[in-house]
Length: 168
Image 1 (cartoon, rainbow, N blue to C red):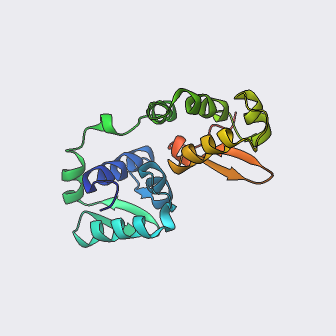
Image 2: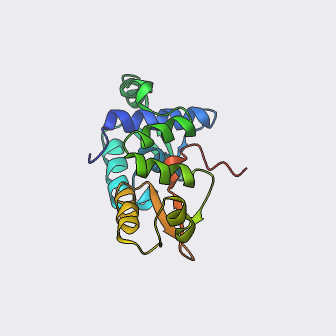
Image 3: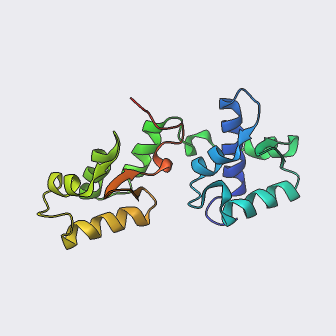
């Protein structure tokens, strides 16, 4: 099943469904929470969902995933400690995998997108084209933690916001 176990994926489906009042789990949110880089339309996620459906663990209706009794049984065996219960907890888990310099970059992006130039300056680089800065960005991007958006802007990916971006 690729990068995530069926048990953990089923647990995420169950948790997202609970957040939606027990009315199933939207594919988009499940894919984000599970960290699928291609999102809910990506091939890896599609294969994982297909396998769960074929084995009778889930039902899919109108883009919403529902656990079957069999799926609920397996989902219940996963420790909920493995699944972040808030954006902050998810972000702390992500930060723990980063070097101090990468953590500083991550922290600068917590409250929204920033320009590459601004980030480079705040991180002590002379320019946003400095080799050290571009390597730093590349390493964090390779972990699917940041993404490049329009006009030389950088932001954290949706992986850092499993419960939605805080728009304050």
